[in-house]
Length: 232
Image 1 (cartoon, helix red, strand yellow):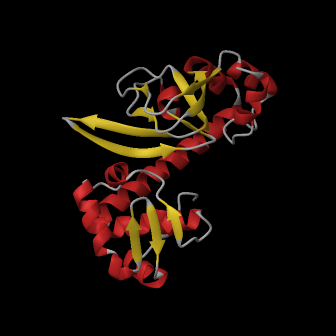
Image 2 (tube, helix red, strand yellow):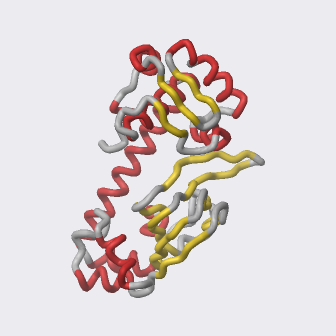
């Protein structure tokens, strides 16, 4: 890994408070690699050999069972994934693939565990990040179990509008097939949900999203920070 790659991970909350010696031990065996789109990085069930840091591009986390596949989340810069499996030295519960050309830093899991054992600041940061991940999982479960497909789509759009500074027009962050999987519906159900939301002020044409009546859309969606705010 080049020296100018190091600040990309040193600034992360996970690594920012650890000692210089511990950080040196953590990155001494790390390396940066660029991957083209649609490259499988890990497969569920395999041992957790590395902790991954997404520096550029994006990575989809997904799972398969009994001939079915579902999209679980998309990881964007600059953030890590597969932390729990790395710390626990357990098999991956998810698979991962690039969705576009991406640069990733790979940190050997054994080095991560060794530093976790002796650096208190790093250990606290790991616990904090895992706690945040757990809260995100709970919110996703509430979203899937407590809302209809139409409500899930409406709230997804409102969240992405907020991430785009409250914009009323923006592009979908993923293709519709992946979006349907992420929201727990089939592509056909997604198409029906898009049509059903037109009277409530939402138009989706291809990847283009247009909110024409935010008040009506919010009245239908009923956004809730205990489900939709992933920063808390």
